[in-house]
Amino acid sequence: MRIAIVDDIKEERTLLHGWLCSQLSRRNLPADIVEFESGEEFLLAAKERPFTVLFLDIYMGGANGIEIAKELRKTDADCLLIFTTTSTDHALEGFRVRALHYLVKPYNEREISTLMDEILARIPDSGKYIDVKVNGSNIQIPFKNIIYAEHFSHMIYIHTTGGKELVTRQSFEMFTASLKMDTRFYLCSRGVVINLEHAVDFDGTMFLMDDNSNISVSRKLIKNARQVFMEFLFQRGK
Image (cartoon, rainbow, N blue to C red; front, side, top):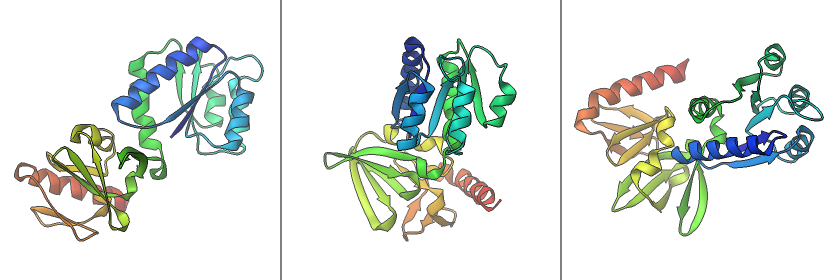
């Protein structure tokens, strides 16, 4: 995930940057956050490599935020746009450039936390991944490629599409922090999480996965597991 902060006031950029880092860290999510002093500078960078999310100040020297947003939308319809502003006077224009949200200054970290949940819910699957260290190297595993993961002896064994198993050393709580924000993932027990997109069936005690694995569900979760799986299939079928 690439995040851009565009504001001509350095202190405003620094404050938002810090809050975003804090919220991403709590969710165990990696991201590149890049600051820009002007909209023109941002547009040049966005042409080289698109951004997933843009926090854009409206009132700046040079081209204002609305003008920058209009230019962005000529080439990028997917970037999630959040205006940071002292006024909502431009709400109609913001609607026309498909702004996701207005952050009215001065805002606080609680607002950033709520907004981050909405941002993550709207990011396409291809933009969601978990960053883990395997054999000394940091790798990014797309959510959609994870079939299930299990915790054993301080290690996480991640079973992915293509029959690959990746092993990383970290706590199960830290590993699942970002996965639990995504409705595809379900904790079957204290040390096993599955991706419901790869679940073929639930027989009442265990999930059958599309790699032919059978994942047992904790006895106290059996009723809940059936309900969650049925609701997931219903939502996917819409």
